[in-house]
Structure formats: structure tokens, C-alpha cells
Length: 156
Image (tube, rainbow, N blue to C red; front, side, top):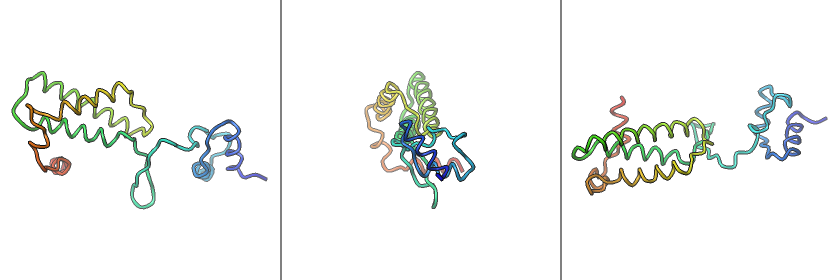
């Protein structure tokens, strides 16, 4: 007699899915069966990167998450340093920061979120725009300051 895991695995294989044995085992051990199985949830994730979350577990991580965090920091630095800019530039920076933050949150919530290519191009342009302030590179202006440490101290 076949185990429930084997039945699910064979049905998924027969229907053209790429089943993941580990996910199927966990699903069945938590009380799932062939009647309640969602095959899409039990497939192998070929594009998902997993990162450590303590000793025992890993969590999925979106491939653009770190770049979005870096872009958020860059826009925040641009707003923080140097002489004042026009009100239009300041408002645009605030809108851009909000837009990047919303996209980062979507990527944090769903590691498989597909950021539209047009939006990736816009973010790339933002990276270039917020890299300079009045013709000087931000890295030269702010040298070796660790912005994450400053943000953590402000948040405390």
C-alpha cells in the first residue's frame, strides 16, 4: 500500500508538476491529504532564494530585496545631506522613497513577486539620480558613515 506522500507525489508527477518531497512530507504530517492538496504549493521553488532565520529555519528572500533596501537608503541620504533643493525635487524624492518602500514591502511579503521590468528601469534611473547632489557623489560627501547604524539609533 502506498503512503499518502507517494500518492500525492505520483499524481503531481503525472500532471507535469515538479513535486518537492520535503513540502509534501510536511503537508501530510500536518494532516493534509490528496483531497486538500494544492499542487502549486507543493512544487519545488526554482527561483526562490532562502536565507537563514536563526538556527533551524530558513525563509525565502526576494532576489531584488537588498537592492531595494539600498535604494531606500540612498534616497534618504540624498534628502539628508547637502544644501537645500527645490521644493519640486524634495517632493519628487519623497514620492520616490514612498514608491520604493511600497515595492520593498511587497517583495518582503511575497518572495515570488515579479517586479515589472518598466519599474526596474525606473528604479535604476532613481539610483543614478540620487547618487549625486549638486555634482558631487554622495559617497564622497558622506564618506564612511554607516547609515543603518544611524537609523537604528534614531529608532531606539
